[in-house]
Length: 181
Image (cartoon, rainbow, N blue to C red; front, side, top):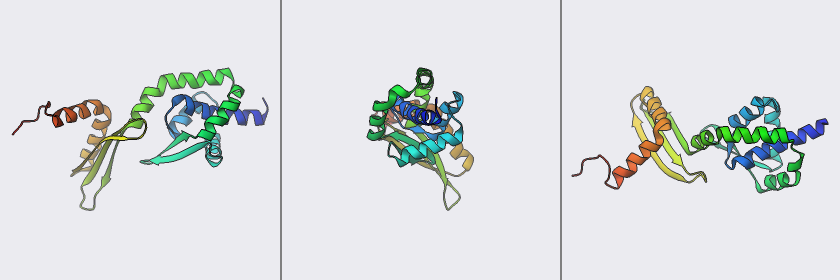
């Protein structure tokens, strides 16, 4: 394959991956795929992502310090025209990556937990759950006295979010374990 052909295929596989995943992917997730399958190195991946954003085939957003890429209508259209230029082994590698990682990536996308130092030495912890379309389902903000407590809350939120949200909703509608007055 010519150098131009490889360049085009590399850009197309990035579009293909985003289309098949059907959610925004982080820079880390994209790099994990391309490097695990020896498609391209980190620096080429960054160059191609930048070019795809510049040509409006991808949109870039930042969420709590994580860069995510979304496929645009123009990117979807370009992929439709040129998808046949992606080799079958590369499509299979992308499909395998998606099958093995989609639930983890969705979970990472839907759940966030971060903490921020306050002026008085305490820490504000912000925990959230979002739907795949980005709509926020719930956000819980608490202030704690130590960084260690903030870190524990973030870890527990990410590991137990379904249980925690379920308990909160049950308590709010009167089916929880909270005592009633």
